[in-house]
Image (tube, rainbow, N blue to C red):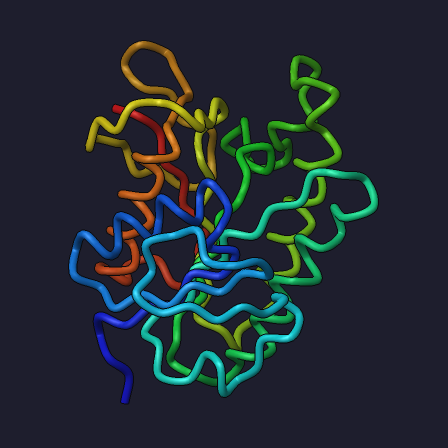
Length: 213
């Protein structure tokens, strides 16, 4: 039986991972961080291990595993899919949820869901490879019925140093704008949304997105 307040955050030393840990700890979660280098987060427990070396024993007993892994260089971009599929394999057939920190580029810009944001002419070319890699990651997750996954996309403007407002709009597959016509979210507000999703468990085998209210 899993502990409803026990979660793991993989890649917990990254900027997003650290804020997700901080938010979860503040809410009373029992958090274990996983990262390759020494612990930089507020996690109460820590395992120093490469993501590809994480085993079923490592993740046994968690209610949820949050995957905050990110890759940015051409040679490492395929790791978005490789690492999340590894975690999915590890959690296959269990009740433990797998929540992925996704990207905005894979959000759809039309009701028919035929065009993704990164495929539009105005999308910054320098971000296309990362967005494409995360779109591939989501496509592979969609094929899996053996894992209780959720892919959480931030808004288009994902601000590392943005303020923590505590207020956001929960959206779905399509790029969503707030009342000011913005698609923006801070890392801190994204962490709130991620913790809310862990607590609610409302969107299993779905992609959701968040934007500042």
